[in-house]
Image 1 (cartoon, rainbow, N blue to C red):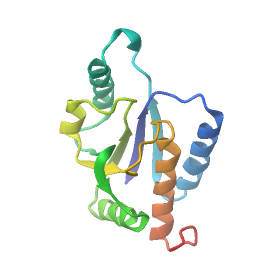
Image 2: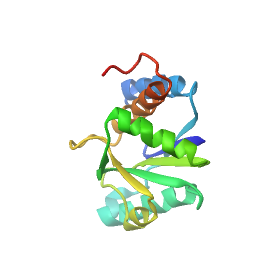
Image 3: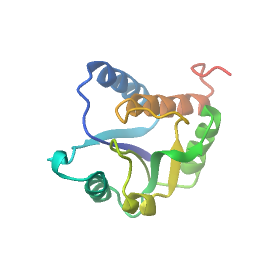
Image 4: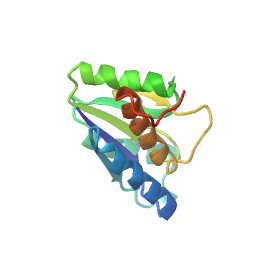
Length: 157
């Protein structure tokens, strides 16, 4: 199974970039993982929030294949413990799924087209995080999930 994380907009914060890279490297030992930034919509000062979400949604939909299982990271999604998230990953691997795709939306969330296409919504927390901070948090949780599945000592109960 391949896991892809798409995120809207780049980050210029070197600390966020470094932490994201650290967990990307660790995760490569467990699963075929890729992380891709979808560029910000141009001239956002001249468009409404709704138009921005539609534009970002269209860019996301260009990347997602019909056979992909699409999980959006959304504050109204299902909450997991780390152990439950590891079980979710195991079930997806056992199902024979080829591509598991996660998406971090832009600052205003997702368009209706993305909500309609999504197979699942996952919440990382009841709190709101910047869409840039979510990247290393989520990749670390993927890494943690795989170490749980391998019974490695990274996760402590």
